Image (cartoon, rainbow, N blue to C red):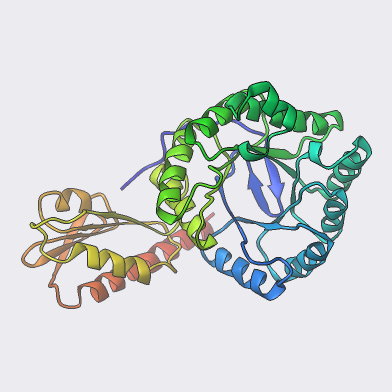
Length: 369
């Protein structure tokens, strides 16, 4: 079975977003953002609940005006997951959501006005234990930096980030995290590499405006995969023009592939060919749909023939190798044979039994101390 990740993570300062630790030795947190109208409290709460069911650690909500701030307060009362308020320009909105229980403020200190306004927001955050996220984006760099660099560059992104950081450092505020996002993979990756050498605070990773479900997933996996493999990154958000729940699924799949988080089924499946003894693609599509509710980390191998099947099955909690009939492995050892009749039903039952067994074993381990 697959072991610990070989990745050595960058050492960063740990902050808390509500009950969720970010940075330090904490697991890399998976974030998403609502795309409903914040003023539609019921719709936003429903979306947050779906994100929570998918495993999200932190949810960001856009708060563009004071009406949305009041709606945010009502939303906050109805959900459990930590909420970040996304705020631009108006410091009064930040002060209001701080009163209403926000878990993190996404602001850029340089964009909210005078030093007195920045100090008011920072003081409110300090008094209530609220961290701040500085979010720099290649599409909204300051005019003087656009003029200085001619176009967005990694160095321009980092210079912008450090300007905002300096506001907080001047006020002796350390509980912040930073993002330097771009839609270009190489620009974002290099900016994060540069920034990682400049500060000790956690880094929020993302490829901004990555695209639709397929193209955005690929672009995010490439960019974030490069950084995460180097140990850079403490929380991630996959930006997709899709249902936000898909962002959470993709985020976990990226982390699972690098062995940085374990949540739910890790499927090992062949792409199928004419050697297959059952319909691998159809079987996988059905299994993935049926087992989305399982949160227990399990390795499940579904291989259509005996060429790679036994080797993969021996490394998994549950393994299926195509044959005449098919052979099931449990915990790496041959167990019994299955025909193609009711194959998906039989596999689902075996996987759920193994998941329940693992939950019971983990609980017994905890009970023993």
